[in-house]
Image 1 (tube, rainbow, N blue to C red):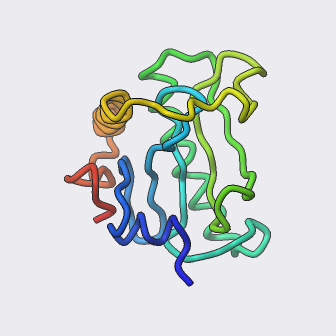
Image 2 (tube, one colour):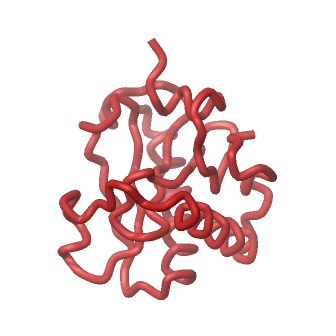
Image 3 (tube, helix red, strand yellow):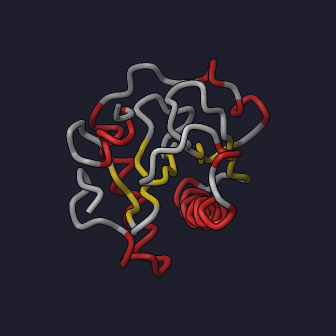
Length: 147
């Protein structure tokens, strides 16, 4: 059975994509802790991060690093947080978001109902910053497509 993320990657469910390559995609969280909160997800359905091979984990980390650098530059945050929780969707994903303190690491801070306009703006800002940082070849031409 396909996971929610597999359906987003396939375009069956909408997503706001900011990155796509042969192995990994990244799209905005619909429940962001902070604006720009992004999920870095392998195209392959892998439930638990310890089940992923080392090369894929390295690729996820490399993409998360690029996303994080763009977030920090765009939102002027002192740090960027990452987390692999795995309880929300049984498909490996790395949360990446701009942080200003330890309180930003709590899922209690999630905005449960962000406006579509706010999500669209965050996606466009992140896509533009990734392009400006030289990663335009991995920024999908269509924000709603994983390419």
